[in-house]
Length: 496
Image 1: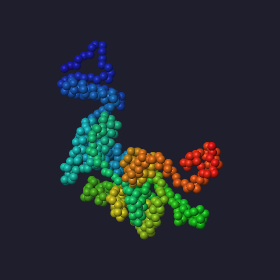
Image 2: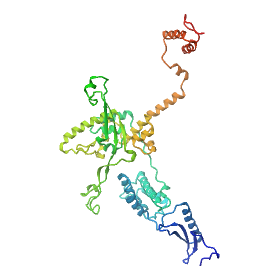
Image 3: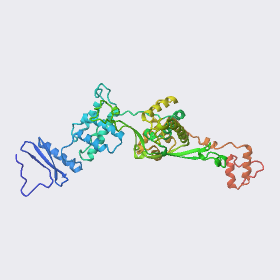
Image 4: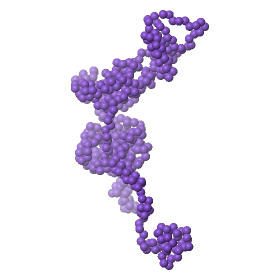
């Protein structure tokens, strides 16, 4: 069917959409969405079986054009192609190594096998939700392994959401379906910070163990595991002051550090963090060495304990050190000197504060084992080492430290993180309840009566004599405090 001619003397405006029935029996629509990089018009084509369908498709393109939500011209990528490009070329150069481990695991183990065949512009929230549901089924993982935990599914959701957010920014898609899809709910584990008694028992037990100062630092300063293990002696600045009386012989003969009553203070600057990285196969192709794990490959590379930058820009900070922690660090320094002498030529000097017996940084796995041993030695309930960081943050809450200062000390970049780390303890709840009760049910009369100690009769008589020698406007308030009214002691004149 031939297209109808427009009335003579008229023409379709430039850029206007057009709809017609083609020789193939299909309805066709053309919409001008903009211009290409070379300046030519960007005309998009749609083809439908009925006129109503093509009209709706043309209107949809026009709405996208008018709202500025126009994807790039050309055939859309598949989800698999985009995820591979995003994780290796966009995410890898810009995020930390530990973050990339989670990204790659989600992309290659779950997202590509689950939704990789979809076109990126056809992906729907329901596709993602179906994948999340399958990931939690018992038969999802091979070899009869149990279903994945909600945390693993939630990590996959965060990964695909980040990948598709970048796709939106680059106009590969108009909207991000992962922002609409509902991930499984994660039951937040209740974290109970150590009580004051538990913290004291841990510190007492840590004082008698090797590298025990590392856990005293965790409880008092709240450093992350990698930050504490990444400390070097050059990061610690200590100032000593005399604690003895002025003009004593100690101040004249000894330095502040040699004083028996010395007081130390200082700062710790967080500059780096230790990370445990997974070993990668060095053989070609990977796994041809016959070992499943890269750690067993003869040509392994890229793994082990390495020093890296802090978790965020806010993590690079300076923290004040109280006197008790300074003393613990000094005692630890003395024990480290003994380890250095005992290791002799085997000692590898790196300036690390916490080391193994040969001077190398402490491996995170050994640090974890030592923490569990400390809990058993101190008779304290089983808990994560990271709970010590929650304890330090809660102490700052109890001390009423302003939130900006807390964020600086803890290395937080978002104030919302404080809700996860600062806990209202039972002791704090009890103290607040007592303050509320004392404020609402306070007895004004009792408060007045309890304003000071009861005066003796001789003191009251002395005040009456003093009042007799003062002018009227000064004498009357004194007598009113005594409750004597206008009656004074015998022989003492009362001002009229």
